[in-house]
Length: 275
Ligand code: C2E
Ligand code: MG
Ligand code: MG
Ligand code: MG
Image (cartoon, rainbow, N blue to C red; front, side, top):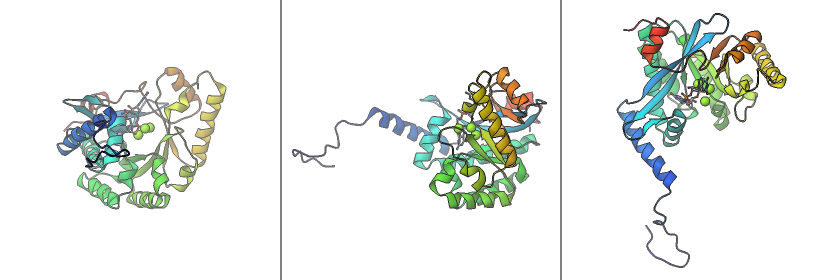
């Protein structure tokens, strides 16, 4: 700390600390505790066949309610976890817990787990996934890993290499949030994917605006051409569902079909065996 107070001296102590920085630091401290003591939980959201309504997958979503901070949204705590490296133990816990739950349920459809780029690009990630599958005697195909295009940004070669190894392991690879933000088409052809999830922003206006409808139809055709399965995210209205059915989209996920919910709620709704 510099105490010398010259004309141009840098003053480290004033203002004490930006309020945002303080909030974030507190969040980080609490999150570190929560991860260390396994205080996070998972909710599951159904993915259903648009024609039959059948369950075809479940997405695991991390949840955190802190004693002091209350409910913290994943968007907020995942970002902090990524910045601080906490995403590694957090992500490993999520992966293991989702597989444990899927095994407990004897789930016959894939469980989807979100993987952040930091996690995915770690040299030991493939080994961690392999060990987790083995531990829960899980069929690799029934584990789906969701990643966003952020993965390829940092290190496209390493990303492609890691995904290649995961493919060799037999897990299913899905590109999340396609069509949100600054999407590029490159990842669809350069990464060894089996599935693309179309972002909910693409649904805005599809019931009334022909251009939005056209865009969605074109993306579905593109995916079909690339032999990628499609999940459309964020379906909230029956009007949207009707359009998707007409367009021949296979799988939908959204509040209309079911909000993310506790394991017990999912088990009851879809008659999954407990214990
Ligand atoms: P995501 O992977 O794209 O997950 C879908 C998000 O959309 C979830 O938000 C879900 O609750 C929400 N959603 C589902 N259906 C609808 C709908 O009909 N309308 C609207 N408006 N939203 C819907 P959630 O749970 O808040 O998670 C936000 C993001 O946080 C996730 O987006 C994912 O990127 C990240 N995340 C969540 N859990 C994990 C995790 O375990 N690991 C990592 N790395 N990221 C996670
Ligand atoms: Mg996801
Ligand atoms: Mg998404
Ligand atoms: Mg997202």
